[in-house]
Image 1 (cartoon, rainbow, N blue to C red):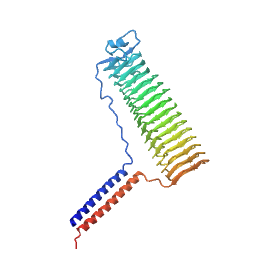
Image 2 (image 1 turned 90 degrees about the vertical axis):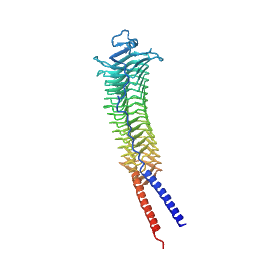
Image 3 (image 1 turned 180 degrees about the vertical axis):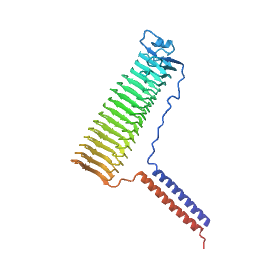
Image 4 (image 1 turned 30 degrees about the horizontal axis):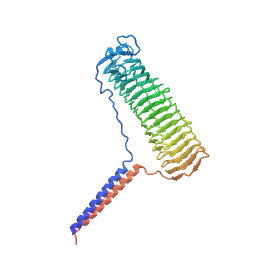
Length: 496
């Protein structure tokens, strides 16, 4: 009977120890898994590992669909077919097919392959274009429609692939690297540029000028040395830039300059020398669902365009602000996540009036969560600006703004108004700040109403919480050890 009781006590101790161990492991898991480290996204650096099977080499070739006479290096599609450059008939069912050739530059100052004045259907597939003249292109299309350029390699040219006055053409799956400029479109419309690797060029990876209604999707435009990954300029309107990577470029990841009605969405943009995405002029741009981080200046820089929508982006760990609006009117910033930036999460500056900031998460930034500077008539509604080193919401020289139903906790100041007049601060939650709201610099006429406000030391952070949990586990382990020790001492004590 005594032996049975001892066994039951041992079972109880084993059960208690198992429960303790499980709780301790859970405590460690909670304490040390608040911050998930950023995953480094790797991509192909060896751009020339798989070359197509090659049939023939041609030098300085020109195909002009309107040509009436032929030479040894130029002629129409019939001539090109006769000398073995292509097969097919130029119809949708049987397009001209240029495949498995090398196009090189000889002694002439010219492109490797030029196609002019064609309305026939054609496909260029699995070819190599290399060593154009220093003023020309590897593949140059002019006044062309109905083309496809697929799975080819283009390198050591002034411009890898150049489309001029080209419509309804697809450029897909090509490797365009080691050129002065990767892929250029000018005065070209309704084209599809997809799944190309336009990386490691000297200037732009992909460049559009005066080209509208094109789709630029799922391309790699990385490590272009001096300028941008992807650039649109000079009234290149109604384009879609989606699903691309534009990383580690010499200036910006993606730049939209003086263009209207363009959408930039679902791109990955990091590690660029200037900004991740810059919208420079133009109107009615949509910038949504991009991930933008570790750029040396701003994550997203909206510089002068009006009536834009900046929505559902993730901007973190950038060298300046996560999102900066400069002289931009009537724009909407909505549902963005902006964290761990070196200055402010959102910075609205220099006459950026009549904007709406709604439902953004601007937390853990080195200065302010949201900063309005010399900007008026802005509505800040239902934003969260917690755990910033300085202020949750800071107004500087900004008047007649509405700060309504926001949460700004655990900052130095919940809201801070500096030389800012006639603002409404209402229905906000301001907890755990050193000061709930602060006015300075002669600010007058501000209305503070129905805010929930408690001042005090900032709330406990995750590092402190982890330390507390660790100390708890150590103390708990020591206590359990003492209990077990006492039990065995008593067990071994001889009976009297």
